[in-house]
Amino acid sequence: SAVISQKPSRDICQRGTSLTIQCQVDSQVTMMFWYRQQPGQSLTLIATANQGSEATYESGFVIDKFPISRPNLTFSTLTVSNMSPEDSSIYLCSVDGLAGSENIQYFGAGTRLSVL
Amino acid sequence: DAKTTQPNSMESNEEEPVHLPCNHSTISGTDYIHWYRQLPSQGPEYVIHGLTSNVNNRMASLAIAEDRKSSTLILHRATLRDAAVYYCILGWELAQKLVFGQGTRLTINP
Image (cartoon, rainbow over all chains, first blue to last red; front, side, top):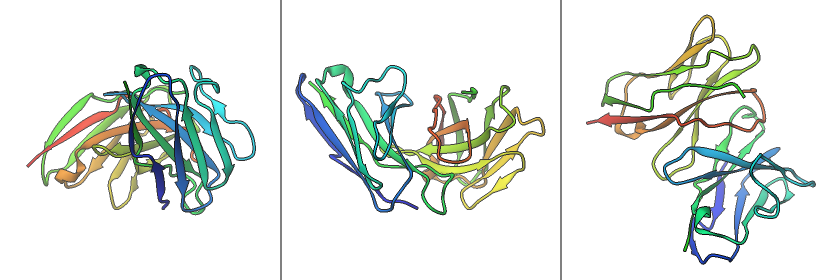
């Protein structure tokens, strides 16, 4: 299995500001993903974080709003830029491709973001 | 992405078996059936997955119809800790993005 740490676990931010969420894994992994879960809703994939190259974004999500970094095989960040109240959600990091568990995706506990 | 259909909610009693259905009539021959669950205030966790044959692990069993157009997740003896949203997802076996539907919210009564 994998241990995934997300920081911060929660935050309250003012509109117009930006927040960077960190995701740290205790093992090297091939794939890292970022999801958003709006209040009372299911999870929606934002992007796939690729090591050494730009992230691959899903339809409806753009790099200017959600810049992502992945400097190595155990770490990634997601920034929520120029926030508005509509960005209030839980943001989750997940990993896949762990040696010995290639078909299992592991999730962090999420970052609960409230934008005022 | 192939679509799955699940009941919005189900209710069961503690220590009884639970059968969670999932319909996936447009499944392709290479689609695996994955089940994840999300406990309150936590990220989703893997439950089980399969392709054609029924599968068992320490958490649950997965029964797959012969035509693969439906499947059932079986919790053999539900506990209060099994109260969660259960997601049935189709996709590749390895290194894939997951497309979550609305899932089934399972309530367990003591």
